[in-house]
Length: 115
Image 1 (cartoon, one colour):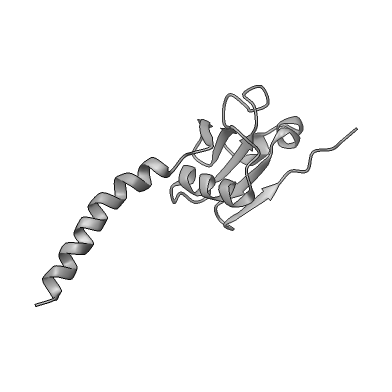
Image 2: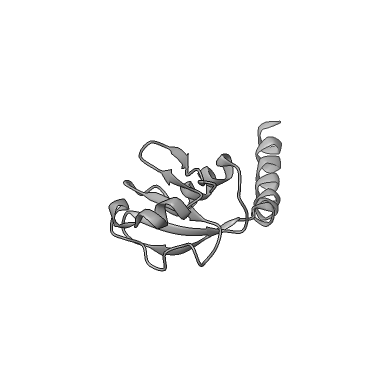
């Protein structure tokens, strides 16, 4: 009977695979502040869009509406999350790396203006 052997193998791989995956998963951004809709995150590096997307999904955790604003430094990141995106100042918007918008499932990059 091959069916029980296959189930046993799947169970062993699942049990040993999950801790390994958890150890390999490294978050580049940490949530600094959160409101019902807006999250503020500080990242350790200027990550690719795919990484920001994954971090945004993780921080929103299925909540809609939800947006995550990403910053490279504590100094640039707001200490409190506004109740909605309109609560960010122009400086806070332009200082951001970008924002993850859960409703559309996208990351929007904020281009830094060079003097």
